[in-house]
Length: 191
Image (cartoon, rainbow, N blue to C red; front, side, top):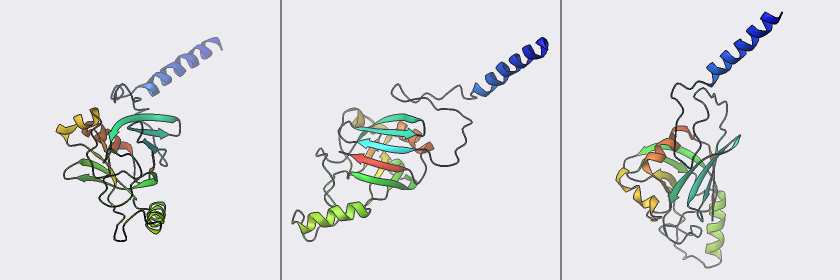
């Protein structure tokens, strides 16, 4: 019986060691992000959601276990208030979701948001009714989370807001984000 117990303990440690082995040796993303949880994780549903803070210039990814990763980002205008209309270069605030994943010919990996959505139209129409916008103003569209060009990652390091209202992530880091974020992921953009 004692020998059987010892063999069971050894087997448990052996199996535990095998299960903790990662064939890639772990994926290091950056000093401000967690490493990949495990190479063998099977997802039955989308565990991710994204919170973007304009104030902090950060895109944070959360999953069922909490904080997962943080990416530095930049926006459109230096004015970080809510998008008012097409052409103002402002990034909208609100709740959205990713509706398309694609590789853009200029920006590379891109996660297109469902802007404008019902909330966006409501705000836009309220502002128009209050005379805050010209009668011919349009709401705009095409807001995405996308990469910088490979040679322009410095824009993120220097907080240089350059987009037309999108959220821009460094090219190398956007490839990482794009690799695991699926269509349907909720995105909240906060002031």
